[in-house]
Amino acid sequence: MSGKIIPNMIYEHLVSHHIKELAPAWIQLARGTETILAVEGDWQHYFKVLPALNSQLSESCEALFAMLPVSEPFELQQVQLIDDQYTNISAIQHEDSDWVLFCDVTEPTLKDQQYQQGSNELLLVKAQLDRALVRYVGQEVAGREASGLLHIDMAGERRVVTILFVDIRGFTPFNERHDAQVVLQVLNEYMGSMLPPILAENGMIDKIIGDGVMAVFGVLEPKRDSASDAFTAAKKILESIKKLNKKRNNEGLEELGAGIGIATGEVILGILGSHDRRCFTAIGSQVNLAARLESSARPGEILLDETSYQRLKEDGSFLPVSLTLKGLGETVAYSYRPSVVTVA
Image (cartoon, rainbow, N blue to C red; front, side, top):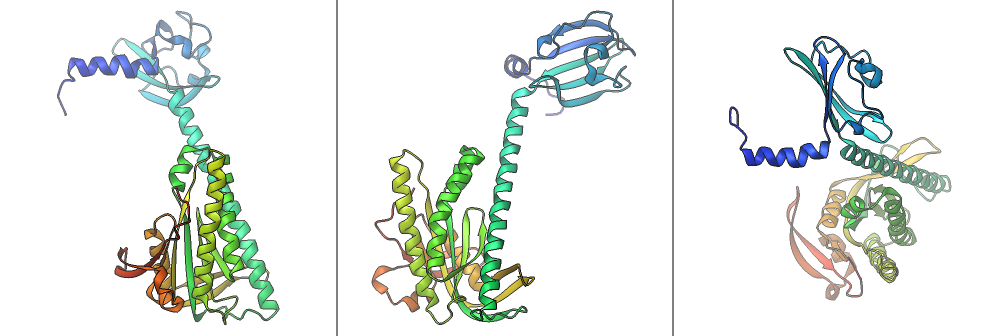
């Protein structure tokens, strides 16, 4: 592109569309001074009163105080000259005059501010959820340890458990279309459908990851069949989401689905933190497998690994599928899709 002239039709398009959107104004200054020689363009976007000829520009534009006279070219971005108006200001030197160019960037600036505000609110929401989860898990772990119902070495121990991951489908685009308050309300509604079934079936919530949940079965009640508890919880989650979606549909609101992955096997369990605030965690390949299965699950689908499937002994309810999982390669899994579940 270097050295090539812009075709007239392209130049005219840029001028008629983009320059018009920027509503430019420009002020000519006597070379090496801030004395105004001329004011042209849409100055109303930047000044309440037209700057007078032969006056000093800094008297009309305080934002340029100490920036004048122009000793070298400069650019100031998103300067608020008038309430709720944002301007890019550029200083250009010429042989006989200096020029100051004003371009209105209010619309893109406000959009950036709204996006940043939404991002900050979502980060705050996530932090609040994380703190609530830490408090809950801390109390449960500390309470069960104190009563002798839970024995896990602080250094970690190996145990066969079942890992369940569940994630809301379509939540990211939903998030992009709605403000943070609506997103928080909907997230709480769907979390209210996912968390109680896990707790009711002896699952321990390991962590909340954005719009998803990781849970571990076989820790709080090690004598129970962890795979059966996890699968029962998964079916209850889908049924609970089905009821929530029916309610939202009746109210004319958008429906969201959920995908679930379940894997059973040996992991390392550990408890991190102090006596009154402890964080439970599970580490191992089965955790990764359950997460990958969840990522592959369609809305309204539960995917189980071979071990979980063998322990359930419900052959007629499942469909074997071959999946290519990231980092794991070809994997045989078992799909369960209750026909009564309504999903987005």
